[in-house]
Image: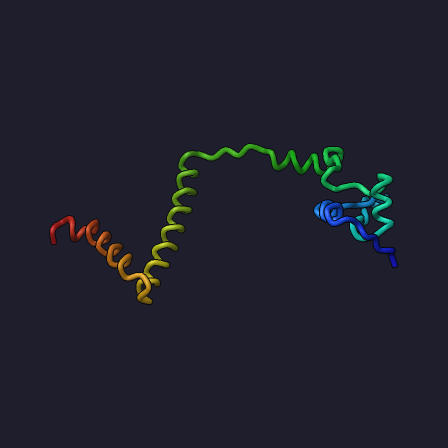
Length: 132
């Protein structure tokens, strides 16, 4: 069992916010270290064996370089495609919003909004505009 360490509160808090790892082995696997908790990990961190994952240079890894290149491609779409995407998003938003208003009005929670909404629909309906 590893020996526990007692650190000042602020230092422990600072160490706990980051992820610490030992160097990778031949297969590329590395062990997680807890320098805020265990004495051996804390001493390894002080000597420089354990590193902060956020401080590591990830640009050296060829797999990550290829992944970044595949994600950085530009995408070209026509104006009609863009318009259809935007219309679909707005249609879904207003469909959900109108359903919520309708269900709230039916339950009696928001009758004033429902009556204003029905009046708005009646005003702009074809029957009202045609005079029938």
